[in-house]
Amino acid sequence: MTRRAENGGGPSSSEAEQGPPRDPEERARAVCLRLLTGTPRTRKQLADALRRREIPEEVADHVLSRFEDVGLIDDTAFADAWVESRHYSRGLARRALARELRTRGVESGVIERAVEQLDADQEEATARALVDRKLRATRGLDRDRRIRRLAGMLARKGYGEGLALRVVRRALEEEGEDAEFLEGHLPE
Image (cartoon, rainbow, N blue to C red):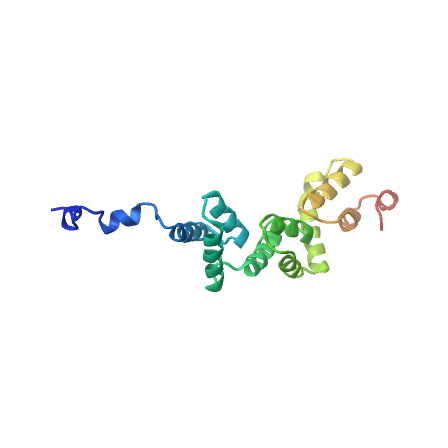
């Protein structure tokens, strides 16, 4: 005799677990848990996912607030981890990190506190390490092209023009590039 027959023709407990939850709150919890399993998410990212799945806004707010209360959603921890990870793995500057966090729906105050983890010296050291790695690949190019490539690479990672050009100038000077040429082309 099958479980269905034993239960009077209704779905077995395993069949009920496999089917989609019918209650909007249950569906919202399931969506959030599934999304949080792979990687941390911001409240806004989860809210957007629930909206796309047509979960009523009041149900979504309730579920998201509950997830925040129990610590499953923490935008501050997300932002701190994001800044540390993306700065060290990709060499991104504070400006680029702030832009990425804004696109993920993190509040401005939380973003400011998170990017403050990186001080100017740390950011400059990272910029220098990026230039040092790329410097070897630009050998043999004319000076202007080297400057454009190195400064452009830093700009794409969110470094300001002044810092980028200062780091590039210093790296080229240390390599023996013509310092007089650089003096006329790069700001102090």
